[in-house]
Length: 293
Image (cartoon, rainbow, N blue to C red; front, side, top):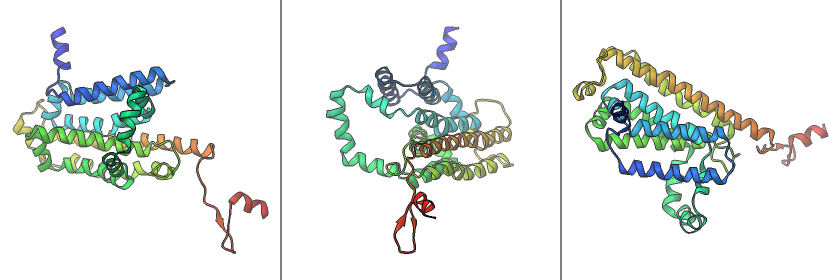
């Protein structure tokens, strides 16, 4: 019994980089959660998201992700959509910073955040246009049969594919679920609500193409050896439906969470409204104008 349980826990491909990154993030969050008042829902969202990432990348399930198309689609939806959405929805930034000792925050974290490499990387990855394009493009690029073949044949490309999906998911959902008005937020609250509807459209189209295809688009899984004895076209159909329906549902949930933040900002009066122009070229606020009329 114990041996069968350990089989699923032991990673298919061990990675020190992933393990150290995962442990550091978990320890910092646990320390920060003890020092701050973090609701149970936020903590649950964070740990469920972290668990999904670990299970998707560092357990024996990775074998099935590498050897069956529809299982690989499940992994991509988890890494690109669900796990980043859950973690960003828990708003862990303040908690993670609080997990660092004060001396480390002053001597290590602040200089890093002020350095030009960090400002350049964050300026690119958190640019709304770049983050949105990468969020969609990476799904479509890795869905190209030739790119999928490269990822399956080279473990370095395979890991880069998974990490790129995860990073693009974090940057995109960070922008969409931002709880601040613009500025300092990088997207307007209305655009945050509309964005998931825009990004899900090409994914639905790609999923439909894969679903209704009558030919084996990814023979590389046959070459590497399939994990299950499913019919090839049946497994491909299931994979297309996974990237079509569940991914769209998750993005719809993200849009609803963004709508919730928009309503919260509106109720608190934190959304800046542009004044109405008058005939003389001056600007009068809508409330003032209504009072004068």
